[in-house]
Image (cartoon, rainbow, N blue to C red; front, side, top):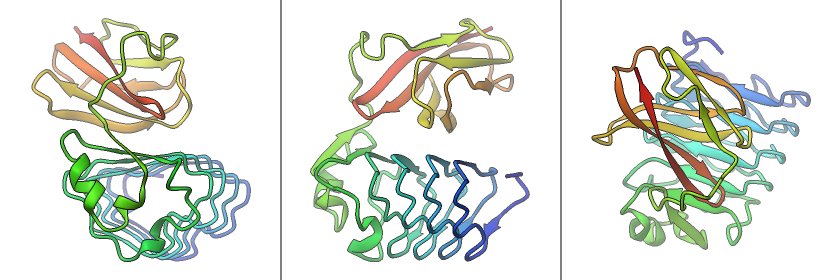
Length: 224
């Protein structure tokens, strides 16, 4: 969807049974009630860093959706919004746990198996926060896996100039690119062999972080 879209109204894509992938623009602020209710083939959703609200039942019964990333910009998530029975991985980027409207936000999610990934140093906060504490497997994103993890993964070309691609990962993997000071410069859901435009980055060394179901994989890459 183009960057000009700021709101997805209620029922906009309700029951679009053949919809499989969603990539929103960078200015989306709200997703209305039941906007994607019952999109049973939906497997990948990229929620932008501009998003503030997710409405009632917004993604309810999207039962092939296995992972989702919730940006730090979120201020409200309504009941049953992410009631997806196949969710295996939820990545949350807010350092302070968002106060959720009800315990039914993640209705149908198996909270004893689904991995909840949170920012480094916040596991204790999430493990005591209402609703979030119901997840058995809470891990901190920066608890990086060893180098041999995801051994088939590579960044190419590396060094790069205008952009790069990623090979050897599952489609719909949350990715961030940070500078050596830890500033997040790119944050998005990526697909295998997708080209990431990065010509705007200054020359220098960067870290790419991939949030996999097993944990975080970190690699270095050089812009020149």
